[in-house]
Image (tube, rainbow, N blue to C red; front, top):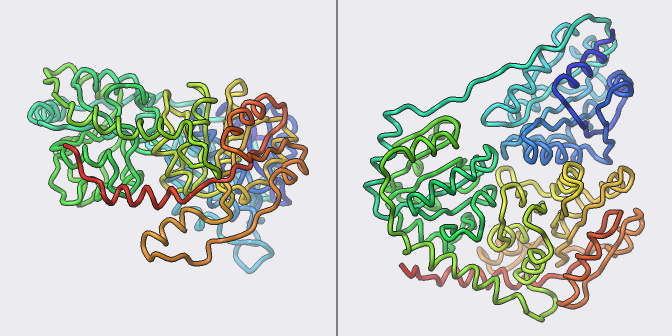
Length: 545
């Protein structure tokens, strides 16, 4: 068989459902081999969109999303999405076509050393220089991508290798065992928890990824310790849970920060320091820390651990509860802090101002979305509001990129979410800047028949940068732009377009958009003067504890 046929056979062995990408000259053989496969190739309009689709597919399923590009410029367009997946701990396998082996030693059309380019943004990558190594290379790419902590891997597949004749079979799947925390570490963690007067739990991306939410809730309830979660840990504990402190991570002194100010012990569960740097909640490095995760802690002067439970997060929490843990009196945190945030959300529910305040928009969105429905947030000022103000009931129902934090992820991500969960409402929330970075994927959604909804926060500016500039320098620099007519723009693709013109219109428009059989785009003017008001409020905050 051809080497490209063997590669497809190995991909099928890895239970690949979709490959997102763009065909090119250097992956001609692989594209032809896919015609005889049950793997669905989803042709995107830009490789960035393909990588983001694979990224969100990986986050939602736990299986490796696969994206494909040709050499040179095609490969380079994958870079942002692959880097995002790697830093956000999403399993992704990127495959690039490449020039023939006999061109790699010299200057050659479109050739560049793609393996070297992808090395710093992947867990592992390689050049497939012989057809015989395809089964092992595919097996390793998927095993490394999905192993804790997950991330991206990359295979560079030269065009002359793809057309070679080879015999081979896929490598059978491994059956890895789970690591369990050792008894001495459990004893030390239990001792620290029992000695603490004001412990607090910081739940991160790993809780969601490891499906450890139930164990987290049981542990929190058993110990009566309040739980704050990172942006990427949203849904790890329901917002309705009395011990939920909602999100931390604004990089400003937020209400939840008061709980960390008071805390003498932080129990970090499934937490990566890229999510919210520990210098923001442990600036003096004096807090005791219990680290519970699948991997040892990162070395950082503000994150010096006093006990580490390394292994399955769920099993670590279950084993820890077998020790005699003292239930805490932690009303100092749970009632006051979460109440302030929820009161603010409720206060804007009937706000009639226009353009609409971010708090009101998110209140309306929450009223329309079910507990299992999915919001995918782009990066921008709206992300900060979503992270702070959009309450979640379930894990993986609010997808936020906050490791690499890439603009342009929301639309391709919502496409992937709806592809995986066709019976759930899937909403992309973008700023007008991020929307136009990948809006061409509306055509992909129309062609494939994936009817997700995009809500655009329209302020004709890079709102988050304006927020930072005003906070830092009290003046702005080159953040304004003009936008097309988003309604006509959506309609040009055959999608539905809506424009919100009053504060009471968003809910009925959202409901109508979710009934459509085609993608929809909602243009919603936003009042981002609330950004500076929030900053001022946080700056004046006095902890009530």
